[in-house]
Length: 398
Ligand SMILES: [Zn+2]
Image 1: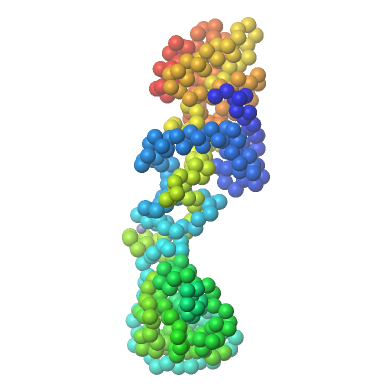
Image 2: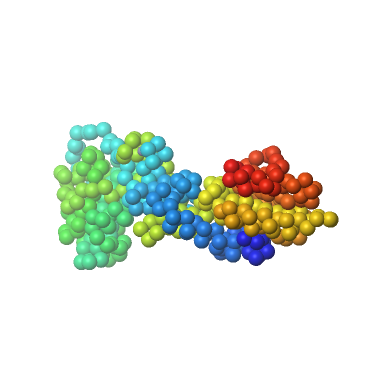
């Protein structure tokens, strides 16, 4: 492609709304507007990736050298601006959306069951204030979360350990669609908001996390404002209709597969059942392949193999000579960005580095007189001179 036909506009500085280097370089190299819309060059890069994916199939991400993580449903690329919250094990590769991620739970040491006891807990309507007031760890409390099932209006009473967070996604797998219960709904089931207890509830669906039956002598609500019950034991004091994993995994929890600590990451979805997301794939490529001067996206993902640039001469028509090479290189199967602008060499060098084809070929007057062009791989500091007659061979090797 010719530089001028693509109307490429590069920028010296990163846009001030850039939160990742990949995005900054895609804007600076003229692939994206700062509003994150693809330019003509950007669309060309996206089409190129689309064509590649159709050709390559299964091993697409490894072929384009993109380090991805995922599972059988989705492929992710971790990135600060990613819209998906995921849990990932760096040791074994386990990856899941946070809301459905599993982890290895560690039950507290077993204890003798103690008799139920009502204790005054004034102004303790959060787990924090309760644990502080009673001077116990949050692990020794039971947290109640109340929902209403959409299908039949039944109150869903979920219980998790006080140090853990409920996963609504996991709860919905057990109970069906739910929404947070209103005060009126909680009260009409016989519970007290803020001090709700699973004991003595009429007509509520009680679902407890699978750690709860293994946790002895917890402090739970008493259905009486200002009071809690100590030494509550699921199975003895109340029965759960459903015992299942309903809590959210978090950073530092142990991986269920290998036991190593899990990480919480933001990620973009690159592929799911609906197909590839090429805009996110391009961003991930830019994020994983750049240096301080610009993009270094490798073949075959890069839209161009070669950056071909003539430097204006005084006696010889370097543009005509370069135009001939442009045609020959394309015939040889190389994808070429032909910088046909009447610009200074320094400007073109900078843009070549920003846009990032893996090789730059410079056609200058002095070289032409000797039948050579300058060839510089993007990643190398050294440039070399190559006979024009050997150029295609040299490019296929580089
Ligand atoms: Zn693991």
